[in-house]
Length: 131
Ligand SMILES: [Zn+2]
Image (cartoon, rainbow, N blue to C red; front, side, top):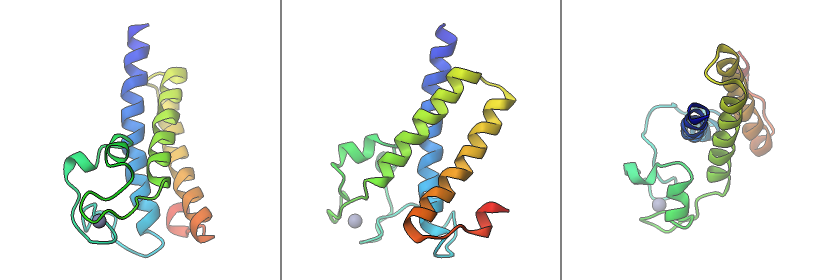
């Protein structure tokens, strides 16, 4: 029982973190940008985010949805996708535990999440994500 609880908590944190990266992928791939450079930054003023501004879901809540430096709004999609990723990974961890099936599910759903975000925002399904 405690083992399942630990898996769920760890899977939520991992899923929220992966989804945070998937937000970056969905933002940068349609523009043809690099996924690793520049580091996470505010798209309005360009300041590089500090580690405490990068904690999935909690940073958005702590900053009340605004950039710490320039006060521009952070899209609600960012914490929503992070939370969705966390809940999805936690549910998979709860149902399948630490198994190959769970790994295949989270990888597949991560690709589907990126495809869905880009499709909703740009009306594109990129070959880069499909192949
Ligand atoms: Zn800013």
